[in-house]
Image (cartoon, rainbow, N blue to C red; front, side, top):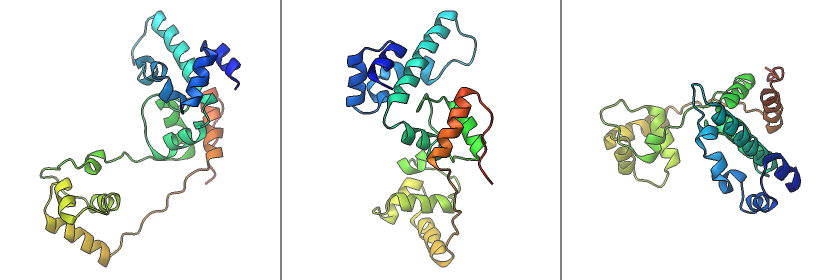
Length: 200
């Protein structure tokens, strides 16, 4: 989409559209659009007519900026296949991304940010996979540091790592869709079209 079309469609000035393309992703250079509560986390109840009109205008601006963004395909693929993110991303809402995942048969596991950030776990049971994930994410840390992150003893970490050496965990291979498949299903979902399903 050209800058003049983008400006006409969204009411953005040509200078602002050019600025957003120069600085990187449009979402980073237009926070007043993408971080507005009506775009990022729309209210679930009824809205006033003024709020609905404002939301429609902001979503139109966000969608046009996303369509013009050179990172849109990568951003969309990551938001659908790799990470469960909130807000308006790559021209899609959370609900639309959930529908895209459903149609493609994708399940995105929630990130265990507490473990990766080192939040101490208290008296909870330490999961074997959790120890292995943390070790892979922090290969340069000592076993004592990993134990501290998980809030467990050093012997617990050693026991899980020893078990992995003796009986390696068989990893599931996850079949991911191609970016073109994600784009096709996204087009169908955003336009409200018929279901495009992943071949089994």
